[in-house]
Length: 326
Length: 262
Image 1: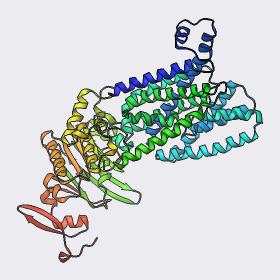
Image 2 (image 1 turned 45 degrees about the horizontal axis):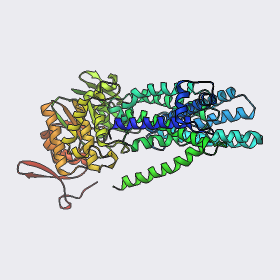
Image 3 (image 1 turned 30 degrees about the vertical axis):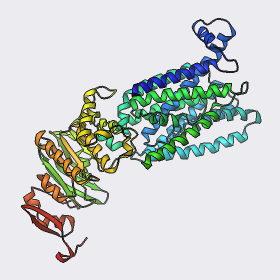
Image 4 (image 1 turned 60 degrees about the horizontal axis):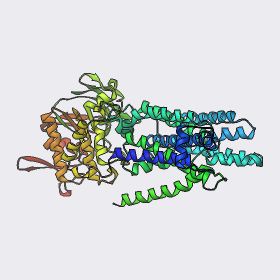
């Protein structure tokens, strides 16, 4: 299969995931009614469910997954580390701390989002600042600083969970695991995804070179410092947006790039669109299962992405061993 | 073509090169010789604008290297680093195409012409049937050839090579040196390479730069440089001169000829 055909196949799978997300739920919608409700929205119950509930939820899931996958891909190439994920700056911990603190003092949803944003921005500024202050720039120090700061934030999160009243703890845990139940209007998230993707794409050839290390990239004519700065910014905005949509959903940002590379699409010009489709499609599918498989019970989607993500990642690692043995 | 004036290269507490001036002209093939840690790589990095010398200037056709835009510089100067990350996630084809990066006109990548050039260089390095293999799965020698193919795909006018013969078997060592000599002869490229093999250096290079590792440097032709006294001092190791049918070989002295003093 040619590389372009693989991208088309990924796009078709993503569309199928979105359609499945529209159709499945506590009330399942047959395909024919789905099409007519999409094309000619009426006042019936099906149109109501589709346009008020399913469509926003599915689009939120897709944009959240796409943003996480995009952020993860950028982080992996910037840190030259296949285990980097969107949260290496401590973005998830910072956002979680803000939102949890908001829940603890009983702030409204908008205020919670604002506090989450503030927490994420402060944490990433702290991690970036600390690793830049040490003089000569080194991705490993950035990685390590992020891990250490995240560990500190985790302790604070545990403290909040202990202090919080029983009734609030369940909502906090759902948020920490990643849950799209409170996603709200999906348009801002989608817009951020489209803009970030459009900004990142022209840097794709430079990312191919950057993967070989800074000195090699320098020698091939990449203005390394400036490009890295832009890409770190894009990754941070993508991760923060995703966290504000769906809480700290794990594994999507880590596995999406690996899966797409396994398909032979390591060239970032194909990898970037590939991961957005895979990450978005994967989270849409996982969220559909999370809210419909045990309906009316709804699971936080983060549990499912981890349950699915762990075996996929283990399979990838086993395959990698086989490659190395050749 | 490439010009250095009063260059000083140093690490904290250690001076490697002091007051070095040289002109690397078009069509010349240079060997940089010296012991481990004598500053060969550091000098090559300075020539490629990957490191700023502590003093002095590096000029490419009378323009200061540090002032040139990176991409424009990479169209003229190509570097084979001694080491680079093996963790490349694409195929051998993907890797060699990276050599075309400075020439790509579209922000979205290379053209069919670029792919053709990369493919030809793969074949020239005898990697034609490995193009679709993952780069990470290559053997050491195959990887070195892929790195050389990417460098030739870059089509620079100045080649800077840091131990280009490492990991290569004998036929591929000769093939790579023949190719580099051809680039100097036919395209009037400048070749500067750090080498440890005195025989190949003598056969394929016409200018020599000796780094003694303490700031002292010597520049000269084969006649000026290739004598047991200077080379013995360079390596801190006694050498024996052997005439092999008109070709002068420098062999490490045996114990009978003098105990090595490493």
